[in-house]
Image (cartoon, rainbow, N blue to C red; front, side, top):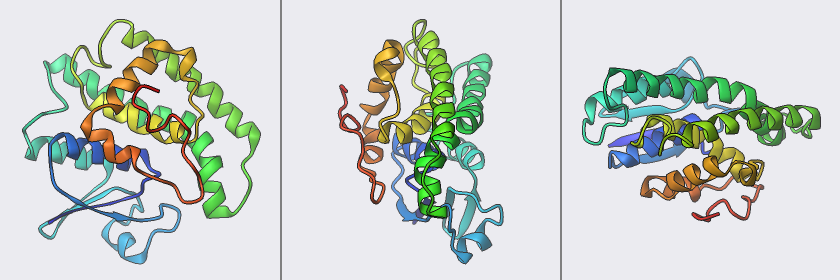
Length: 221
């Protein structure tokens, strides 16, 4: 049995779910609250981070470790592909969205609207949300610039870079905070990504007490 311990709120978990779906791996999900991890999960991964991949009694913890494990073990439909330069660019962009985007955008918007609400029982701080929204525009401009030249983020092939970016954006899009109409190329790219069968279950995710934006599940916006 393959089990993924995850949170539907975390883009790193969504990333692994999409990757596994692309590789057609059958798996079960166990939901955990990232702001209140159980003692059992802390024993499994003392870093206190999700996702955690469990199979046949073996454990792989952490976004990057799981990604590399899946690419090396399930070699069908590789998502880090192409020549050495393209593989390096895929990894660079994964790091960009998993870290730079996450710290500059996700933590400000989702941190205020979701984490603070459920973990601290406090209202969001509008100044921090505005900072995240301003930072988001910079990243959308970057995606727009790339897609003006390519079909996907790394050339003409769908890759893990697209998954990493879309996983981050999907949570913010759930909240309705992505100004897609100002970034036509980025909007077209995201529409292609979320139309893939591997994205279907992500669009079915619901955050308790928060309704998704009207266009969240609309493949054509």
